[in-house]
Every structure is written in structure tokens, then in C-alpha cells.
Image (tube, rainbow, N blue to C red; front, side, top):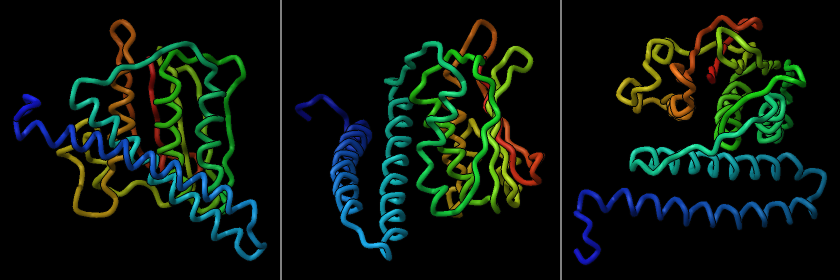
Length: 228
């Protein structure tokens, strides 16, 4: 092959390029949806919101796929700086506002203004948005997103009042894709993505990690992201 790539190495390159192309097309689609929204009739509001949400969800999934491709190809790195934890939460919440309106769900924030986090802003806010999306899809009504310092880590917590995580996810090692269920619809890919992002955050002898359980104060699922 003129490029020097072996056949088995070609597919990941094609995959990465294809994801970029699809994301570009989705960007154009989202722009057209937003223009259409300006001309919508009252009885079309929910349909337009649903269309925009699904397009954004596809875009977000492609972003995760692209990040996982870069990690697998050893091309992934963080851009870390100090940020207000509250800003990260607000960014994640803003990403999911469309779903909040569609689901009529209430998302509440518990975080002090002066709590700081040293991290990659884009990837951590996207990771929190991924989990918040899942919580809103399965909640009955209320989701609480909080942040606080604990045992040398900054802990982001997302709790809902739904039915909780299924047993196969609670038993899985979220850092190991072999532990995930790729047959059923609820694979846990989003959690694997978040766990991977967490693991890239390191500070001295500490490494970021995630935990999930059904010990939410609201009676449903609880997700915790720990950053050193």
C-alpha cells in the first residue's frame, strides 16, 4: 500500500476520517434545524425540539467515538487548567437543556461558587453531560448534580429518582470494555467513555475514577466522578 499502512491498520484511520465527515454534516443539519425553529408553528415546537435533540445526541455519540479512537491510537491528550466546578456543571446542564424541556425534568445544582477543579474543561463537561443525559432519560422527575471535595478528590455526583442502574452495569468494571454488554441496548458505553476520561486525570499518586450505585438520596441511580 502506497501509504505504508497495513490492511489491519487502515480501518481505524478510515473510521476516524468518517466520523469527522459525519460530524461536519451534522453541524450543517443542526444549523438548518435552528433556522427552521425560527419559522416553526406553535404545534411544531415539540417536534423541532425532538429533532434538534436527536441530532445533538448523535453528534455527542460521534464525539465519544472519536475520543475513544484517539485513545486507542495513542493520540489523545488532555488540556488541563483550573476552572470553577460550578462552571463545569452549568456547561453540562446547558448541553442537556433541550432534553429537560422535552422530558419536563427538573435538574438542580448543588455546588459552591469557590470550588475549583483542575481538569480538561471540554472533556469533563462533556463527560458530565453524557451521564446527565442518561439520568434525565430514566428519571421520574428530579436530577441533582453536585460537587464537593472528599478524601483528596473533587467529586462530581449525579443522582436521580428513577429505577437505578441495572445489575449488569453495577457488576461491570467500567474501565474494561470486555465487561460491557454489547448485545442489549443499554451497553454502558457512555460510562466507559467517562471512566476513560477520568483515568487520564492524574495528580501525584492519585488517578481519576468513577463509581456507580443505586444509593441516590432521591431513591434511584447515583454516579460519582472523582478527579484528583
